[in-house]
Image (cartoon, rainbow, N blue to C red; front, top):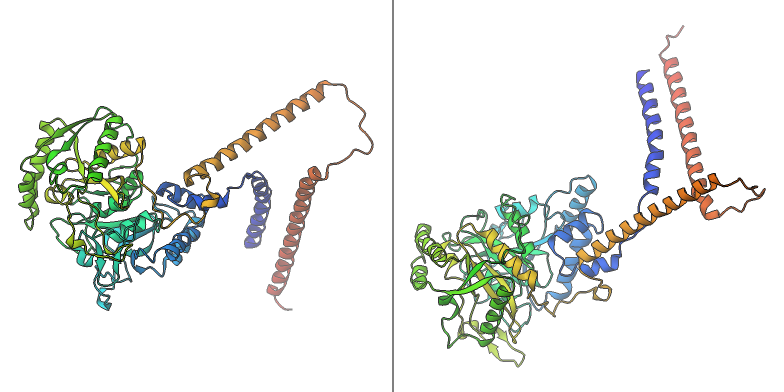
Length: 561
């Protein structure tokens, strides 16, 4: 008997709640987001906007993942960014959508597609490290940095090409997949060894990527392809599950299109310990004293490319325009200190780091800047005239290996323009150990004044005809329209109340015997009445059914005479 009463009470409660639910649905906004503009806005979208679009239901994770996979299918062939595509990417995306439906959409990268360098373990996939595929390479666990991505809700869609064994900075050419070409020109090198990650990020084949850096491998390909990267303080991020080239110098990191995205990725890789994104300061350069490091800026004058020097000088002027005081500084022993750490224990890096930090303090500067590289961008393979080029027969002068890899201090690379050949040009910013926030703030301030990233032309926005701004702008326009609708509704309610009050104070007028009824006004009321009678009828049927079942059950249990 108690079971039947409980069931009946549940039914009554459900019937009591349903009208409230129906009323809540009728109160939902009639404003619809412009889906075509949203799709157009996915191109160059930043991480926070992509996550917002997924979590707030404007696009499913499956749709977003398909968007990037379609771009790869359409544009990747001449660039050759990948070694392995993840065949479970869409299934993972569907699982993220399921989590979202269940109210479990946690993580800075929830639903956001990311690619990783193929020297990082991903369960069930080969970790080739650029060598030919073998069954023995299939990983049975994830690298720590991969787990960090997945913990924050990312969808890993591919593993990127790299130089074999991560051993070359001049280009990204592997035994297993061949060469990855520059995002701005298929006739130029992408740099190495994380070239696949840099080009994939620049061409919008993913929202961001992971790579590694022994001497150059994050920062050099990043700037060559118009991206941002940060080589963190040695030891800040775990290397477990990553194939090593030099365990005393290797560090993992991210390649992104913006500084803010770089801060988000660093938050992910450090498990939110330092809140880099939250603490970003766009006014950090105001009054800050910055040094141009003489030995890395003006060395090899006869071989330095004029366009690169001009771009760097313009970047220095932009630093000044942001409020920084820029001075020239010198560290005469930097080359000997750097060369003394090659092949040495990590402890040998400490005297170099201390000397660098002492130089900063002596000159009363917070950080130093210098060009990422000085030589003309490297051609690779056949050019537009059919001439064959080798990266090893051309002048190559890079500054990326001198300071950060040899001392363990953090160093960040920013795009500051493009060479007439097409490749990106970069600027390095270096600061004391554990000064990642300072580097991010300097870079953020710099790009807030003017972002010098150039969009590659070889993989355009497939929905450009519907472009109405960035994804952030499309979302902001939607919420602005929702607020405008709410305001209009409030004003309409106020007007109705005022009219009602006026009618109460006025003499009553004879009401026509056959008033004209507006069908559009009558329809919602009729729908509510029909819904109410259906609910009442359903309740009656349920009660009657339960009663009959109860009586039959009781009769069956009575003893037979």
